[in-house]
Amino acid sequence: MVFDSLSQSFGALSYWDKWQVFWIFTNFYIHFGWECSLLYLFDYMEYEGKWSRFNAFIQAFNAYGKYDRRYRIKPSTEYGSSIDKVVLAVEVPAGIVDGTLCCFWLNGILNSSWYRYPAQLTVSALHAFGTLVFWGDEVFPGYMSWFKGKGFKWTATDGPKSIHWWWAFIGSNAVWVIIPLLYCKDAMRAMKPALLSLPKA
Image 1 (tube, rainbow, N blue to C red):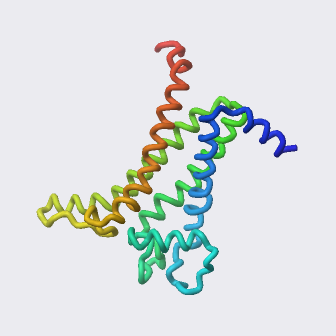
Image 2 (cartoon, rainbow, N blue to C red):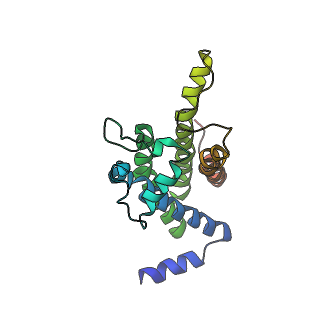
């Protein structure tokens, strides 16, 4: 019954709404999978060699960590983590907060709820902001070193001289800035008539 109702709702969606649903399900994997798994997989390098090859999250952390060392700290930090604390501070709350907001966004699309566009705007802005913080954690130490006359030093990546910096650190994360900003624009466009009709103070 529930699945029939969802199927009918999905079938009635426009072409672009279906792409939004696809994007939201991609977010579910990232937020409720990748990011929330850091709550218990933060020390994964401590049991290296015992990983299941079917554990997609550990395999992803290990593979990405070859190009961004914040995901592959060895030996573990003093607080027993294989993942940098800034990454944990950004990604775990994002998994919980952004993931929940994506649920509201999806429900708003399927049921034409009033909160669809506010949820879309909020979570999309958070996606872009979180990525800028993630980049800033690597860029600003280098900038401060340069500002002090010590040269620009990359701490967790190999910098622009490496092709991996461009596709892993910049490219794969730019998706979480470009697409969310497009959805911010879409949400503001959709809310504009209602906001302009409000009585002026």
